[in-house]
Amino acid sequence: MSDKIKETVSFIENRIQQKPHIGIILGSGLGQLADEIEVSEKIAYTEIPNFPISTVKGHEGHLIFGALNGIQVVAMQGRFHYYEGYSMEEIVFPVRVLKFLGINYLFVSNASGGVNHDFEVGDIMFITDHINLMPNPLVGPNNLEFGPRFVDMSEAYDKRLLSKAKKVARHHSIHYKTGVYAAVSGPTYETLAEYKYIQSLGADAVGMSTIPEVIVARHMRLPVFAVSVISDLGVEGKIVEISHDEVVDAASLVAPKLNIIIKDLVKEV
Image (cartoon, rainbow, N blue to C red; front, top):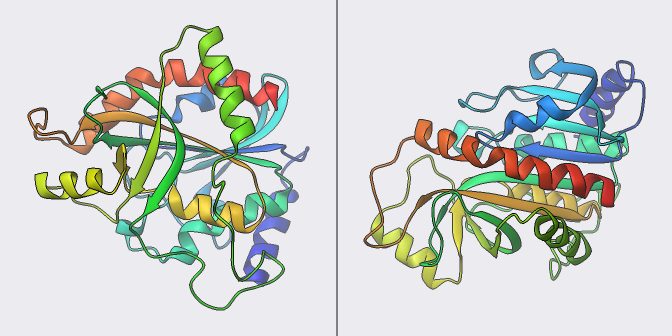
C-alpha cells in the first residue's frame, strides 16, 4: 500500500499549488461546505490513481483544494463505505493520502440515526467517543511508516478541538448535543431490536461510516474532530420507515449551521 500512496500523493502534488492544513470528509447530504471553499483545484476521484469511486447518492466524488476562511484545506466531497464492497484498506486509503499531503488535522462529518431519547431529527451531535461494530482497518500487517502496531484510542476525538467547536456553536447560538457514535456495516437500516441493542451499549447515534477513518487518523497521529447530523430516529415510538433520500434531505437542511461551525473551527485551529 505504501507504493500506491506515494503514487497517488505524487499525482495530486503535481496538481495543487499549496499544501493543505486541514482535511475534511463530507458525509451524506453535507457536501454544501464545498461551496464555501475558494477552490484552487478540484479533482474527480475517477482521475486519481488508486482512489476508490463514490457510488452513493449525496457523495459527489471530488477532492477539493482551496481556502476556507483563509485556511488551506482539502475536502473529500464523498467518502467510501464498507457496504459498497470496498475493503477496509480501500476505505481508509484517502485518509492516509491526505496525511502524506501534509494535513495536520482531520474533520469528519456524517448523517446518523439518533438512539438517544433526547435527540430529534436535525440535531447536531459532536462526537465524543465511539463504539466500533465494523471490522478494524488496522487488522493485518502493520507498516511502521504509518504508525505503531497498537494504537491508543483513549482520546479518539481531540478534546481541544471539541472545546473549540462548542465555543463556536455557542457564539452563533447554534444548539448542539454531544454523544457516542456507533458504526455498523449497513446498508440496511437497523431493526427495532438492533436500535435497542446499540443504545444498550452506550451509543447516542448509529451510522455506517466515520470510525474506520478515525482509527486510521489516530494511527497516523492526526487529531480528529467529528460531528453527526441526526437525520432519523431509532427510538421506540419515533421510528418511521426511512430512505436514503430522506437521510440526505434531512442532513441538507442542517448543513448551513454545520458549515458555520466548520468554517469558524478551521480558523480557530
